[in-house]
Length: 152
Image (tube, rainbow, N blue to C red; front, top):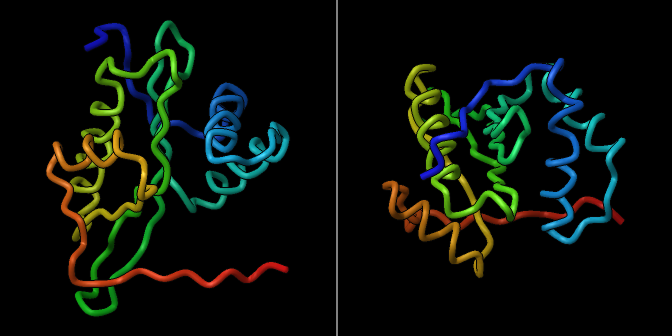
């Protein structure tokens, strides 16, 4: 495990440092680079209190992040956090940074009184699946999740 990384809960003031890493994350998922769009998206989420972002830094440079979105369960009438994004730069993988971010997010969820945390990952993203299972995340076997594209 890398002893040199630390995790910070970022604010809008930290967007400029995070935007290039967020752009890398999007490109990893096959999107075109859009650094200005990345800045704008992150700024909107944080200014409107629509997400929470934790960033792992090494030597004051962002190397990984996780972004959480608030959800609610109508049945239990409690809050839930969606761990929507978790990305570690290629050069910083296999150093325990993903684990640190998962633990930070989990602790944040507990501190905010959430009922649970949820996430989705790619069917073929075996590295992420292994990490999540190792840290106690369970594959949902009760519900099927669907999506409906609304674009053109």
